[in-house]
Amino acid sequence: MTYIVTGHYGSGKTEFVLNLAKKLAAEGRVTIADLDVINPFFRSRECAAKLAPLGIDVMGSALDNNTGQDIPALSFAFLSRIRAGEHVIIDLAGGENGLKLLTNCHNAIDSYRFFCVFNIYRPETNTPEKMIEFCQMVNAQSPLKLTGLVNNGNLLALTESTHVLNSQAAVITAGKALGLPLEYTLMQAGIYSEIVDKVLSEKVLTFTVPLMREAWQG
Image 1: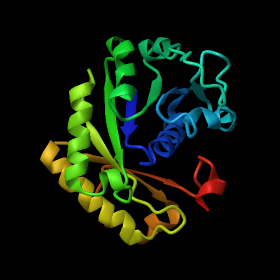
Image 2: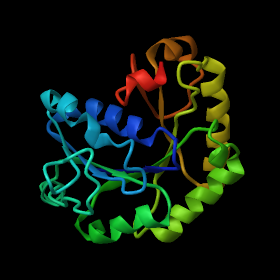
Image 3: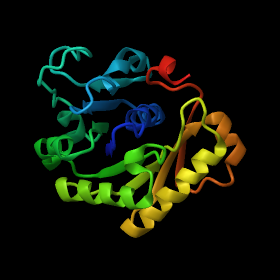
């Protein structure tokens, strides 16, 4: 299965990608294709060494996956793994330029899920209307269409259960207008234990500490 993940800057898209990869790794090898060319300062390839012992490969630059080298030399070696039917997660930047990269690989993708990650506490997507507008842009620019939404409502270390639930309400409202389900919620395990009966997504991913730059988020 191929999973494509996009979201506005600061949505927590990459943190969701990493946690989804950890979950899928229980079923076999997972490949993360880091195609985020819009935000080169915060991307999944930074965690390649951390994820490798879990059976998760991160493919980014064609030049040894270098995290600090922003030469336009993306690796599309992950396409062979898509064709082999393996789990591949494409970490794709939001916006017209980021979505253009799908034109280079969508013909190789048969079975897929395409998620848009939202955090209501980011100003660009702080209302259902803005979420709807963003999803409409994604569907207009992408050769593959969104299949579901992800709630990642958080304020980093200040996050409380009400923040997750308030974000959930907004994402569900947007989803109803778009005809898209709330497929995943990403949150800290401690918060999930407080609201387990109130989370309405089809699936939940939890973490104890963030995988991306924990020091930034404490």
